[in-house]
Structures are given as structure tokens and as C-alpha cells.
Length: 374
Picture 1 (cartoon, one colour):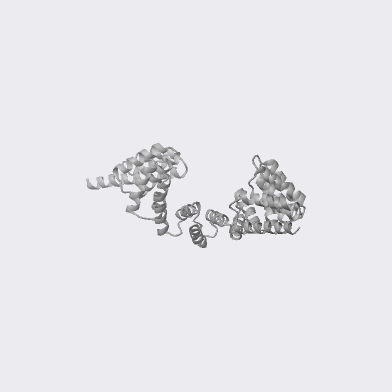
Picture 2: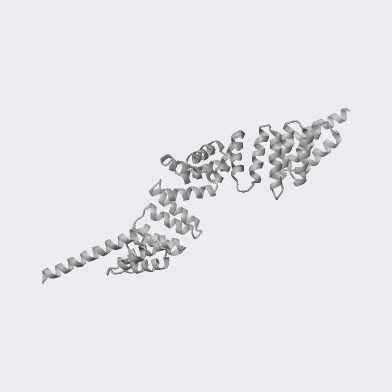
């Protein structure tokens, strides 16, 4: 009798194993509904975890959630089930419930993964302080765990704490030099600090990794411009202009400035006029740069023309107002009027840099002495 019972028991185990093997096989080939039917034949509550995963694979989150809960009614401590349950809660924006699940997990097994998702659950509720605390716990356990380190680096970047952001990105990139997301972030941190030389290196590294997003090309072009590498900037702006789905005023404006600093004033004028044509709001800066480039060429009448257009757009444009007076002064116009214009300028712009104010005040004195001598 005992032998018969043992044989029955062994047979049932064998059937169970075969069913599980069949269900797992069906899951592996995407036959989720059929796998669920087979899993449901299982008598043990462990089936609910497998059924939940099958429903998740089908995209039926409600049934997946129900089966996770069925499992957890029988076993509240299983780490793998709680972890997958917590991930589903996050996906469904049940963030408070997810927080409770991951808090339980970090108490049972404090590791970088659980702390990261606990931080994410807080982040989704806009609880920045608690999210950062948990990302820090995660990064302390594993200083090269990408997800937590990236979140912390973004947090410091958004807070303009660039030193800390660089510390994290550098530490990570020493070991993972081709990590695209971290490289993008570090390139932008350099860019935000106007460290254009290092930004250029990182943006070019991204291009070598086949990352050709428009924002990378834009910031690379702007970095070349900021680094006074105007020919390289023009090359990138050319590419942006040629490949843009619609004309972008900023590309023409920036390329125009680059041409201007290379003393290609006609090309600069053509591009900046194109930018003005495309823009739907004020363009005092465009007019100012055209004035500046013509002034560099000693074409003072043309410079005045554009400076005055800049002032027409913005009567409080500090530098355009100054240059109009300075050019009239240089040309030897009526000294009495120049003095009055300088005095009005000082009255209008009370927050000038001390060096500029000192220079203008001295120039007024010189002109007054000249009038007195005459």
C-alpha cells in the first residue's frame, strides 16, 4: 500500500513538473493565454506569481495586480514577488503603495536596486528630499549603479550644483566611458558652465558613438562659437540649416555672428537679416550685432543705422545707446550735443559697470575742457 501511495505521489510530482515546464515553454514563445490556463491547474499558491507575470506580458495590469495580491495573501515576505509587485504599482502610478512595498524590501534586504525604486516612488510623488536620500543610499551601496547615479547627477545639474554633478559623471565615466546618457549629461554640465573646450570633447565623442540628435549638434555648434572656433561652428550650423525640417531663426542668427567675427560682414548681414525675417518677436540683438560688425569694418554710417534700429526695438539697450553716442563722438560731431548725450546716458543707465561710468565721466571732462579752450 505504501508503495502504491509513493508511486501516486511521485506521479503527481512528475505531472506537476511537466505542467510547469509546458507553461514556462508557452511563456517563452509568447503564448501567454495558454500558459495561464496551464498555470491555473497548479494547486499551490505559487501559481499566482506566474499567472501575474503572464498577465503583465499580455498587458493586462488589473489581472496581474489581482494575482500578485492573491500570492501575497499567502506569503508576504517573498522578495522577488514583492519586487515585481512594486514595479507594477509604479507603472500604474500607485506610488504610495509602491513606497510601502519598497520600504519593506529595503528593510529586508538593503541593496542598490530596492533603494533606487524606493527613491523613484518618492520622486513620482514630487517628494524630492526623500527621493534623493534613497538615491544616495543606492549609490553608496554601489558607486557605479547607473540609475541612481544618473538621477543624482540630474538633480545636481537642475540645481546648478555643477561641481557635484561633474563628480558623479566623472566617477561613472572613468569606468564606463561610452555610457551615452551619462556622457550627454556631462557634456551639458560643461556647456552650462561655459566650459566649451570640454563640452566640445564630449559632444564630439557622442557623435563618434552615432548620437546625432539635434540638441547635440546645436550645443556643439554653440560650444564652438563660445570657444571662438567660428569656422567649426559655421560647419555645424550649415548642417543644421540643411537638415532642419523648417527654417530656424537661431541657426541663421548664430551662423551670422560667427561670420561676423570672421570679418565676413556681408555673409553675416545676409544671415542675420534672414533671422530677423523668420522671427516673430523683437530682434534688437540681431540689429546690434550688425552694427557691431560694420563698426569693426569702420563703416560707421552703416553701424549707426543698425544701432539705431536696435534702439528702436529696445530703447533701453545699454550698448547700442552707448555706441551711437561714441560713434558721433569719434566723428567729431557737435561737442555740446555729445556732452549732453553722455550725461543723459549716465542718467538713464544708473547701474553701469564702474569702469564704463568712469571712462564716460572722464570723456565728458575732456570735451568740456576742449570747449573751454576754444
